[in-house]
Image (cartoon, rainbow, N blue to C red; front, side, top):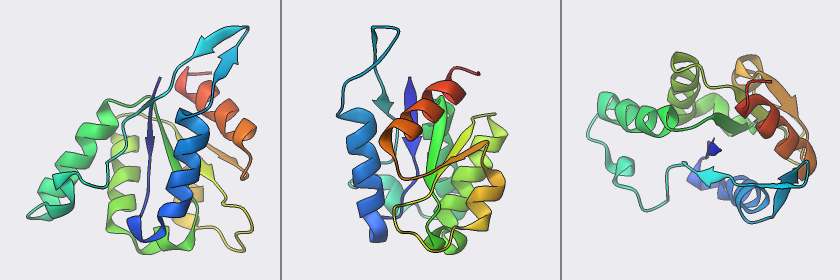
Length: 139
């Protein structure tokens, strides 16, 4: 299953932990190993230097169309992120479900992310994996 994790590199700790939980751990359902592939934008991707908003949107949408589910931390930085707005729009455009994740000890959640989410979960890896698996499989 392909998973796109939204992120702001200025707050990369949330992304790093989510990626570790989703991609680096061994997960199974009914004793069958499940694999999650990372379709997120890498830190060194040229998308960071997109010449305009249309090019940025196109590059983000290319990642999202190849994803089964989009995971977005609900940090307040999301309210001010041009990228996260485009990621939410891309997920909606391509019919990709969104899992909103409240980072541990987060006092406030971004209403932009929460309102767009198909499911919201806390900062717990099993809850996150369950939501990703359920939504990514259309259940």
